Amino acid sequence: MTMRGILLGTALAVAVPSLALSSAASAAPEGFYVGAGAGVNWTEDADLSSYPAPGLGLKEEFKIGGIGDLSIGYASAMGLRAELEAAWRWRNGVDGTSSATPALNGLGGKTSSVAFMGNLLYDFNLGLPITPYIGVGAGVAGVKQTLNGASDRDWVFAYQGIVGASYDVTDTVALTLDYRYFATVDPEFELGPVTSKGEYRNHTILAGLRYSFGGPARVTPVAAPVPAAPPAAAQPQSEYQVFFDWDKATITPTSDRIIGDAADAAGRVRAVRIQVIGHTDTSGSPSYNQRLSMRRAEAVRQALVARGTPAGMISIDGVGESQLMVPTGPNVREPSNRRAQILIRVS
Image (cartoon, rainbow, N blue to C red; front, side, top):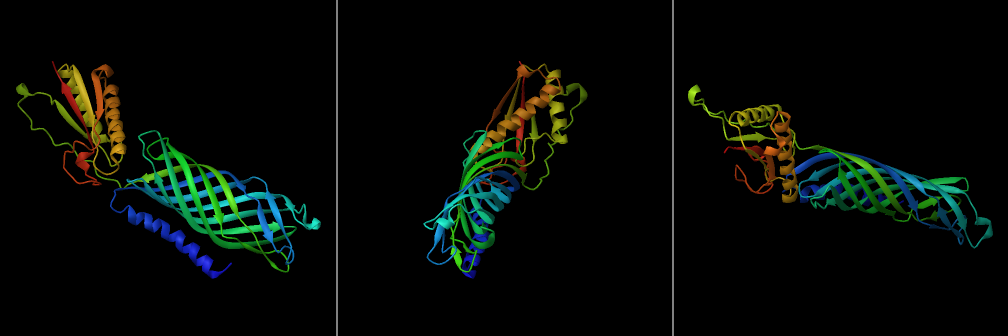
């Protein structure tokens, strides 16, 4: 392999994630993630020229092999993800060889590769549990060829296209399934007295898990205390504000106390209806924020029911980023806007 090929592949592997982070700089990032996967790969038939001597050559057919994959990446609220990936494709045994030279028919061997890639992907946020994505990647691959007892590896420029989908199991864990077309420039192998040029083109089905760390932790605002009134004139509040951490729908200890106060107040005034309205800040896409606001409203509803409030009395709604407590521009993390309102209605 030429030094030019090594440098080109390494530069692209580093540059692709850098370009992705630059293009997403104006968006509020969702944070880092790690992933791991496994699956199967099919290596296409390949021509091996000048083997075992100039003027000769053969075609190789390969068996199905496996793949193992590790990745680390960074996701933005705009749907872009940039990641670094290490993948090992192995156990593609030679299923047969054919050549105009009868002595070269039926040789045994195998092929494999180790790849280090920089990938740029885009998630299509459709408001569904399943999120489709597409991507491209570039980097370097060490392609190894073993044939008739001889073996050699060549590091060459590699590229791939990716089509897949993910399913969010929790706020941080997702199942992934994708197809990848992976190929390299023609590797060269020293399997005898001369250098033979080969081919490497591969189809991969990869299933995996992705764990997202999310953004940096933010301090949850505490609701402003209500001025105390004389005991004889004390009246329960009719509205309560419950705040959340960034990109979360988890009830914090502070928020749980506020929900408890609301449940107690609803019992004292004999409320006839309680409305819970979820809100978000402007970080993230509007469709994602709409779903997040509903999750926050549902979390508050469940907490009220757990404290004895009749479920039939509670209605929920999510308005996403459309009703900001503190007006901001797009893609701004504002703690006061990450909330749910509890509105107590009495007859």
